[in-house]
Length: 374
Image 1 (cartoon, one colour):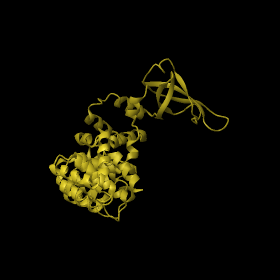
Image 2 (tube, rainbow, N blue to C red):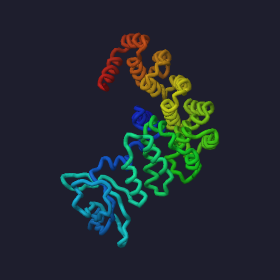
Image 3 (spheres, helix red, strand yellow):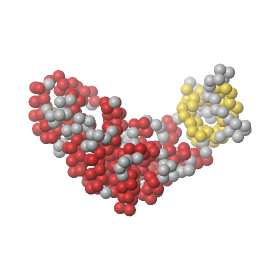
Image 4 (tube, one colour):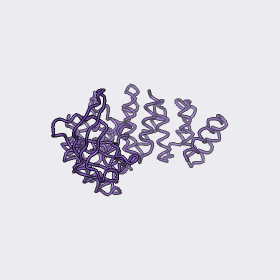
């Protein structure tokens, strides 16, 4: 499983502008309501009526009567209802309101997504549609205000916006966050488990010494299942609020080979988050990376991170790992070569020349792969 998990993690965090480093790929793959609204041709709130099940018992049709148009297009402009090719069990004459997103497929309104549309959802989407897409700080401050919404759809969508936001954007927007709100969310057992890591990282960014106790409780051994699944965010928050003890906890997790690989990988996500959001953490980040160069599980990932960050401080150690465990592993050798090909130091050129003599085929393969990326 390790190669598959690693591949997913690299895809999820390979480029810092994709999404926050402490979030999983599953969250990042979901569309937010803002993204759905931007991508659709039309968005309409309405009422579901007159459902008709197919005689076979599978599927059916339901009328969708328009009550409010949030985004219009020619495909729906002259209509007051459309028939949805799906069976929605509507009770009596008081069906719930619904919001559907439509695309124009050969002149027909085709549903691309939808959510139950309470007044809170409608107001939320109407307001977010007015936000300046270029002002990420204002936008994230808006979503922060809705993290505690009593409407589950709104709260979940606001959280997803943070799960998909780049680390750098989150850092710039921290002035719009409230530490006490985050502390309450972290201490609330009703807070969905998948949100713990993000909330912990946000608390680390905007909290102070008074909130350090939250992390002491979260990291108390044995870790709860809620923390195990969100360890990266919790560790990142702990570092941001208590530098020394936080880094100690990060390295303890990363170097503990008895821990589940997923937990250690989550801790590496914390290191990536801190590299982006804490400019003064370079010494600690490098020290952590140095400790992992001898790790069979993480050497290739760490070397890739150093190359991506264009941090050449550990070049001697990276090149020296070529003939040492786990440097004999082909994937680690490829990572070292990619690092060397990007490194501007003269020792990198010397290393590549020597590597070419030792394994010309592997060097040519990595060079060709790097050329394709360009």
